[in-house]
Image (cartoon, rainbow, N blue to C red; front, side, top):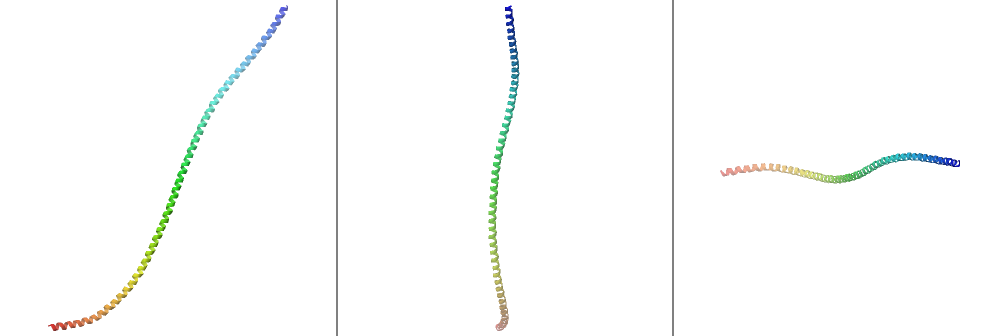
Length: 178
């Protein structure tokens, strides 16, 4: 009987141990199942993270391309602006030079106009002086003409008397010659 009790007691202890081990095994299975679930969830999370990483890398690459494009565009705009500024400065300098040339040409033209005006005034004064001199000479010539006309009349009067006397003298000479 003692052996039976001992055996039963051992069996109970063994059953308890087996039950505990079974419980522990079940607990381990539950833990493994939970771990598997967690592993699956982690794998899914890793896949999602990898997918998200790839997506972010694509977005980053696109963003870097846009940044590079913007930088190139900005550089191009800066270069164009510099070129435009240089062209505008060159055009402004050319325009300024043209204005300076035009002002110089205008000054020269005004000086030429003044010179021609002085020459014309001198020529007009000379012509006026010539006209006065010619008028004086005309008056003097008219006086000379009047004097000569008087002398011609006097000569004419005296010569007609002389002609008559000469005619009479010629007739006397002709009569004598005959």
